[in-house]
Image 1 (tube, rainbow, N blue to C red):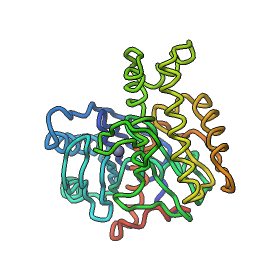
Image 2: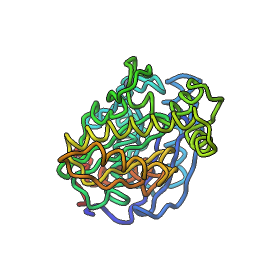
Image 3: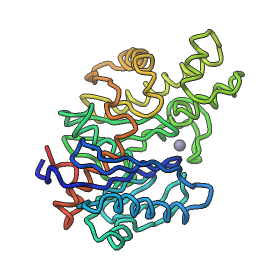
Image 4: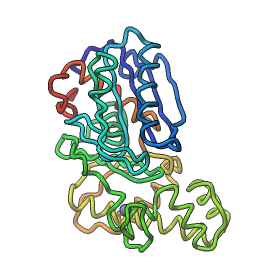
Length: 314
Ligand SMILES: [Zn+2]
């Protein structure tokens, strides 16, 4: 890396349910971690204030911090340093880079949570060494960080693989029908289990356990999720030919129970295309926070040109 290796960094990953903060001494040495519940019920303005307060708290805990990294969900304009919109948090056009810079006086790396997670997996985790790779967390929603020919695709509107039509007709929170996310996210696997005649399940893991125990509705919900994922990934493979697909998020904790049958389905869907490796993420739910740390390090060196992110450190 061209960035200083031991400059302490403050990193914050804002999610719809939790905020994860850390003080990082190096890329991998975590001095301190903090976590807050996101106060989404109090409205978007309160979450902005909470985010800024969390940055203040981390900077107070690390007065030697040299830069701040902040990543947020939704539509994010990294070049402008603006959180354009989040369906989850319901904020619009929040100028986070400016707000945090004014508050702390430090260089600020600002980005999108999933792209930052992809950056971390690419530099430190399971996507390392791949020029063409998809990082796809499957959690409450489904999204993708796409490396194409060695570069992370930065468009605020790119990577929405969760909203590709997956061959089903379920309504999606985005307003469309049949989106991958409406069939294969953790939340929708549980929801579909109930709609298919099953009971209440807390999440995809419980649906998988019920399927193992012989519950037919659970087996259908899980199988549909695998079919939907395979269909959309075959499309992705045909268009962008990744060498590797890194699956993250809560649903990926199923490990080979997910990847094994998914690999078989993808293989069955490919004719002439190159089959990519299918692996689970290496950094777990720390990927976003570590990605924020990487953005902060890049900002420290390149604060004049915040768009020089994905090609650094290679
Ligand atoms: Zn959708």
